[in-house]
Length: 195
Image (tube, rainbow, N blue to C red; front, side, top):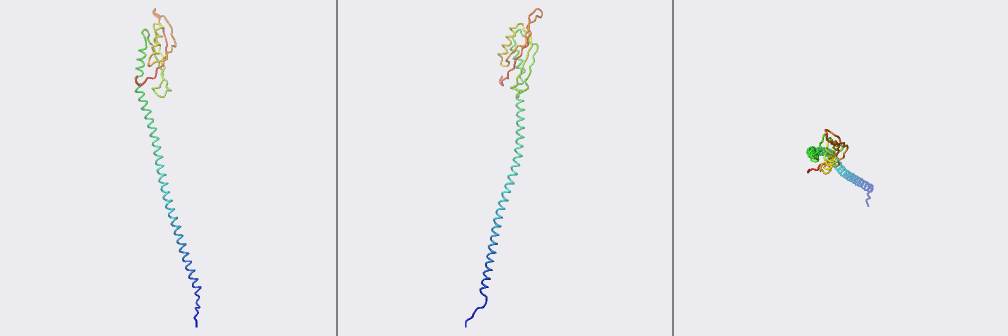
């Protein structure tokens, strides 16, 4: 006689397949979660690395900004020092200007002309001494009007003096002699460095 297997082998097989399927599903899900976690961890590390780089650059930018401010302050100090040095140099080079001015005036005065007063005015709006304008005024006595004219021609031909303008000239008798009293203005030219 034949034997029949009455055990529920099909349901056991189905249960086994179901268990295998669930185990495979759990393994796939776990593997997927691990892959996602690994990818997330890699991106987190990249993001952390980039944030560290950004923080480093931000700190370096702050340091450079401080250095730029210091450099600008140093440049201002340098410009101030250069301006002071230039002023001192101009004062040194123009120190002899007054002496040269009086020397030049004495060279331009012809015989028979005597100066009694001299004034000069500096134009204080000039930025430096080398470009400073000087207006001079002299008062004097001459033996004749021709001598005053000769004095004016000498001023015009001078390297340091220019633009003579006769403001007043009066002829008077003093002690039996005829004299011309005059007031003359002129400009002092900017001296060159080699003169």
